[in-house]
Length: 171
Image (cartoon, rainbow, N blue to C red; front, side):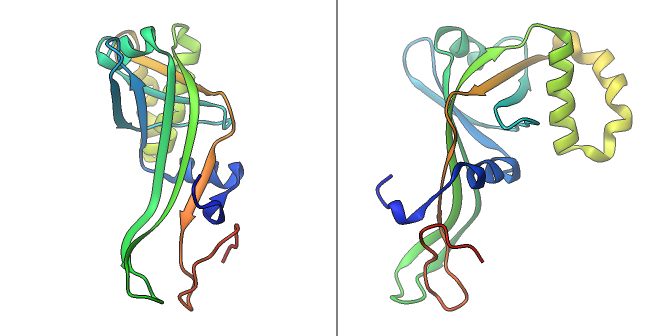
């Protein structure tokens, strides 16, 4: 990280990953080209993160060839004018993590991953979860990304007096 003064610890980074509406997952496809897309991930242990999709497609082919992935999450991203010098800048909170993706084959774990995703993004509709699983489990892929190292966080944020908060200073 070029500006160490903006670094945040892994606990803070995990909080960003849990709050982000989506996390961009970057793959390497079967031709060795980068392939990244925003996905809705959920986790209950901060190590294993789940997403779902179709039973075939570019993501799954990439995972089979190159299971290593990079996750990137951003929240509170807002263009602003620097309060001290008037420069055009961006305030943000971000996290990055590296992991290994694996297609889940066991129904029990697939349901667990889908439950986590549903509880995170549609908690008000959990009464329909079991019926939905009965209809769709056989034609839904679930992928588990296991983090291979703790995530790191970074932020640029100003306090009420216009001073950039550095070295993990919280308000």
